[in-house]
Amino acid sequence: MSRKKLVGFAVLSALVGSLLTILAAGGLLRAAGLYSDDVLRLFGVMEFIRARSVNAPDTTHLIDGAINGMVASLDDPHSVYLPPGMFRALREQTEGSFGGIGVTMGFKDKHVRIISVLEGTPGEAAGLRTGDEILAVNGTPTSEMQSEEVAMNIRGEVGTTVVLRILRDGAEQDYTLTRATIQVPSVRGTMVDGTSIGYIRIASFAEHTGNEFASEMNRLAGLGMTSLILDLRENPGGLITSCVAVAEQIVPAGTIVSVVDRDGNEEVYRSHLTERKYPIVVLIDENSASASEILAGALQDAGAATIVGTQSYGKGSVQTVLPLMHEDGLKLTIAKYATPSGRFIDGIGITPDIVVERSPQDTSDVQFDAAKQWLIEHPAL
Image (tube, rainbow, N blue to C red; front, side, top):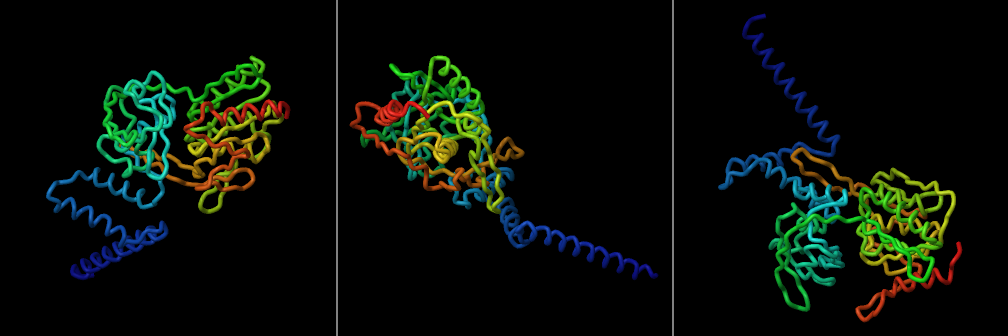
């Protein structure tokens, strides 16, 4: 074969090989639901920005923005890109200790209000009050942030400051707070004065909540508890595994919750509790969400508790957290959950068996009073 033909054959082989590679890559992209023109658009725009932007951009920052934009396009308030600071704060939150200001917040219709202020925290020292509306965090309006972003931006490294713009009684004021270590046991219990009724509040479902709950149950049992008020009000949820760990102690044998993905695949969590010990009343309100709704729904469907309060938040979805490569992460909704009877409560919530509304004019906790009275009138299983 002549040299000219040999060279031509080599060039042709290279072209065919490249074509096959491109076709194979295109096939893989299509199999993943991607198309070459979409990929070219993405990287073409990125390269154009890198080459022509008047301010030379950092490539990693561009990728961060692209990831953030992809997640935002899902129009899901519970899916969010977590930059390093937010990702670190999320880990600290689930471990039960973090740098923050010591307030519990409620999120509704793009409004962020303070639900409670913990004693001995920067929030109390600064004069924040229940009912205050948070309009901005460090100058960024909360209306422009998802709920996760608001919480993560308020939390941060111990000793650093955060500025909150607060609306109270029609007047706005900026508060500068220095973050401190907030140690938050997620469970606390006591005996109701003059009764054998135990009271346990679960503030959130953190890493050690299951063990903390078991400890409080045993302690109150030793004090003569014969019935239980379980307070899940203002509980925003947390780890589903910790919720299940609590449910296994009070939900009768059977399904606790079914987690259903978009293809209809189910992961079922079950209780193996053989014997119920106590009559239970569960308190919920409009800020009871996610894992707290799982627990309330499981007890309600099993007939193992009476639910008292107001309609819960209605966050019936499950998120997973994916660590990325730059100490950042992605929190993504991957499934919805169903109560044991098959109820999907996302956007709906749990309806109490006994509806008790609260009012600013109340001189006592009317929901707690209703729960106490119900147990006095129904002392046995």
